[in-house]
Amino acid sequence: MNAGRRCIATTDMWHNAGRNVAIIGGGIGGLTAALAFARRDAHVTVYEQAPALSGIGAGLQITPNGARVLNRLGLTDALAATGVKAAAVVPMDALSGRQLARFDLGGQNPAYRFCHRAALIDLLGRACAANGVQVELGSRIAAFGPDGSFQTAAGRVKPDLTIGADGLHSVVRGQISKPAPAFFTGQVAWRAMIQLPDAEPIARIWMAPGRHVVTYPLSKGRLNIVAVQARSQWAQEGWHNPDDPGNLRAAFADTGWELKSILGAVEDVNLWGLFRHPVAAHWRAGSYAILGDAAHPTLPFLAQGANLAIEDAFVLARCCNENASLDVGLAAYQSVRRPRVVRAIAAANANAVNYHLSGMKRRVAHAGLRVMGRVAPDAFVNRLGWLYDHDVTA
Ligand SMILES: Cc1cc2nc3c(=O)[nH]c(=O)nc-3n(C[C@H](O)[C@H](O)[C@H](O)COP(=O)(O)OP(=O)(O)OC[C@H]3O[C@@H](n4cnc5c(N)ncnc54)[C@H](O)[C@@H]3O)c2cc1C
Image 1 (spheres, rainbow, N blue to C red):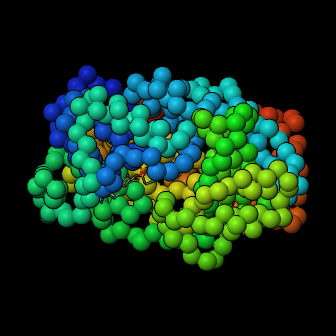
Image 2: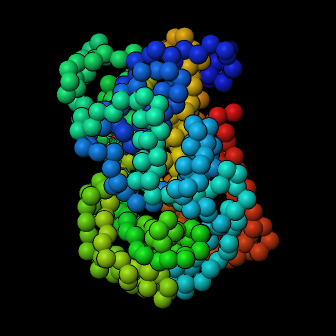
């Protein structure tokens, strides 16, 4: 039996109970992992560099594959109360402002939802607290020993397992293999929110040559806006870099009136350079493992950054739970997760090309979308069945 099969096999022996698990990074992947381990009676401590599990960020899309995990971790009601249930995804010609097609999402089970990242962090944080997870805030981990120990504000610790859920610039990844530096993908994204009460619960993808905008509603009458532009100029990576809303409007000045009026209402905007590094070849070594962006940062064009991190977290906890040997469990985790993640990231990269077409290719693609929308409105979800229907909790 190979390592992957071992993870999938059911067993009545649960091995996480009593294990000391340290998680570096209290983002979405880290908190999901903390909850999954704690629910199997591991002693879990999360070390987060920020002073609070706070409300930074904007909208996220929780697709059915991610929602299945959150439901399995007991968050069904909290998630339903937090997110807006998506009805459809609607590709738009940004230049003419015309709708090209409408692909139904309303029949997804569990529901496809639009959430604010802060609300998701908040519900995960509360569930972690209720399950005995310790969270050390303001705790930036940087110094590791050769024996798997590391320095915290309270002293040196040596957990049974240390999980790097510490994002794009992961320090834990460097304990596993020589890290490849993150590279600029040649795309920047503006993120903003405006008040737009009663917006239809759909994700609209406004496509223009070399650019696109995704808009969808969040709770409390907010509309989330992510506007992407391909450009050679480097922009700083990170979630805290304000930009002049005039730059955003100028980048989409040739688009139709509706998109221009949405962007015209933006008062505050952050600009964010999209950086990646290749999917890590090794996701574990000794007592270390990595998940989410630490292992595989993705372009946000398939809305899978958070969902893949959530899936990783669940599979990692399960593989460790089902194996008395952490080494075997971690090997199983990598062999189960890596092929799926590679496929999802390739699909996100392909969208970067498809959304930004120009000239004849653009006209042909838009004609194809119009036909598909008329004859096969299920085409969008069917094409992504491998992604959305997958159940890592099965
Ligand atoms: C502040 C912030 C805001 C974001 N907002 C959005 C958004 O609006 N929409 C969206 O689609 N995606 C957003 N993302 C990205 C998205 O959350 C991730 O791509 C995805 O959820 C994968 O999550 P992750 O847990 O792997 O990494 P992340 O969510 O990036 O979490 C990593 C965590 O590790 C912490 N950390 C990093 N290094 C250390 C260290 N050395 N010691 C201790 N802690 C450390 C970070 O502070 C962070 O909390 C945001 C990420 C961050 C960090």
